[in-house]
Image (cartoon, rainbow, N blue to C red; front, side):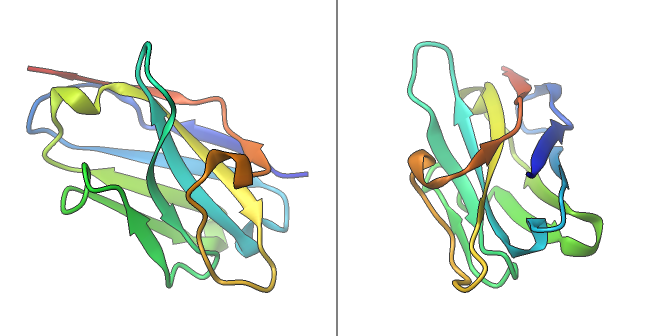
Length: 127
């Protein structure tokens, strides 16, 4: 069983930066694809970025491309989301999710494809 804990959220002014961390327990995490999702009040949960278990394949939503960077350190069982040039529309609860994919070095975009989730961390960007 893998458990995920997000951290790094907070309040930041527009144009600022935050780095979210998703720390995992469990030895299968290094073979897990990970996605970052976000959900604003009254809106659906959307994929923000995703990364394959090796880190060799990544995906970004168009809305964050060029501003956010997903990365992972399997030795530390942690996935990061570096968020730069933040905008008020980035305000949301951010969740990381994992799926064990031992044989396929790919990422997943649909939240139904993930097996386990963190509790979320709030990001608020003021204008």
